[in-house]
Amino acid sequence: MYQIPRGTRDFTTEEMQKRRYLEDSLRTTFQTFGYKEIQTPMFETLELFTAKSGEGIIEEIYSFKDKGGRDLALRPELTAPVIRFYVDKLQMEAKPLKLFYFGNCFRYDRPQKGRYREFMQAGCEIIGADTPEAYAELIAMAYYLLKNVGLKDVKLNIGNLNILSSLFETLKISKDKQKQLIPLIDKSQFDEVLTLLQVFGVGKKVANEFLEILQLSDIKKITKIIEKDESAKKELAYLEKILNLLEKSFNIKNYQIKMSIVRGLDYYKGIVFEIDAPLLGAEKQLCGGGAYELVSLFGGKETPTAGFAIGFDRTILALETEKYPFPSTKIKVYVIPVNEETIDKSLEIAQNLREQGISTDIDLLRRGIGKSLKYASSINAEKAILVGPRELEQGSVTIRDMKTGEQETVKLNDIQNRVN
Ligand code: AMP
Image (cartoon, rainbow, N blue to C red; front, side, top):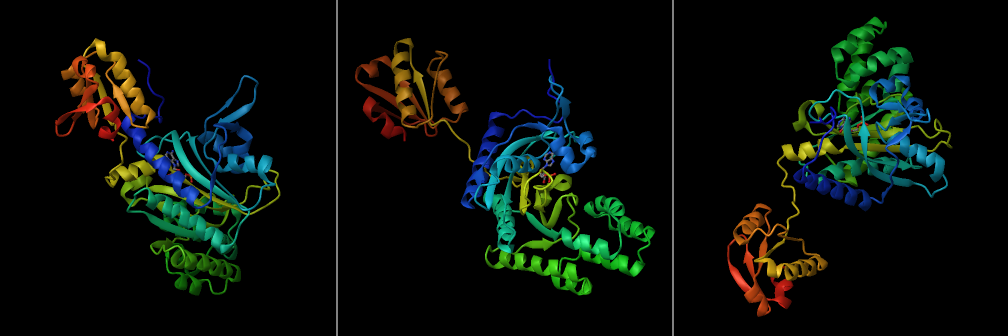
């Protein structure tokens, strides 16, 4: 017996119904916000990802040489491929470009619940707009994508990396030192951050203020602390504009300011946000994104870019945890030829119903009435049509309601009306 590769999954028909529901719902919301769908390849040149994230990324991804000796990688995320696509072919399109996508991603992660080696992301990028309203709309869309799928408990956290960078500058913390601090900030290990800041020679009072900013969610209090930092103050005022729009124009009130959102400080710039499903525990982050700079790195003419990715698989887990009643696509009609004589006509009846868009299955195993009815109820068919030779001679069939067991004789040309 062969085993499925570690960190990958097969999806049953029930799971696929849930996944299709989620995909349809997300697609509809993206479209209602004026976004258009694109697709990029599953694998790219390895260089695309090392250019963005450094050589260190090779340890975390699936990379390989093809038969022509080219260094390639299965995509670990979709922002770099989409910006490559933009730089290559879409730069002349009218701005802003609002693009969304669904795609499988591959990471050499340690598998656990909510963390897989092959997983799906639904994401988007907005290219060519950096007004507060563009960012507010982007964040609102992320929030409503998840609300519209039926999730009740989601937490929206918003930060701003320019503020963090500006604070690092004021504290004279070099890029190398930032690299040591960022993973600790990311994991909210604030005691360790304090210790390290002191090792770096930052005074206790200043270090404590820094930590306070990272943990405060009250914008007025943060403003007070950073009063003397002009550039951080400017960024904070800009953030406040976005937050006002979220509240007043998009009716989103339950968000938190979280200055400790770091993401990849290398290419994210400015506004950043995350959406969590707290019920999921350790792997609770459903969505992450913000403004970033990649276009010029990939050889294009610099233009503002922002986007986010939603973890598709975690969103399914969150819906399941909340016991969301996923809609299921049911077979409406099951046709049963009572004996071999009526098989041809039964197939014709089934085909006519299908042509009217009614989902119809038919007994293909010549199982007889009893077993066929049992099967029809196992697939939750709403109606069974029994096609018997004597009735057929009269131009009729029997339609059985699978829930009540009630049966009625129906003329052939009336079947469609009676099953719909
Ligand atoms: P990232 O590109 O790392 O910001 O990830 C965006 C989203 O994808 C995260 O918020 C997660 O919901 C999801 N995600 C990231 N890595 C994995 C993984 N290994 N398995 C499942 N989902 C993931």
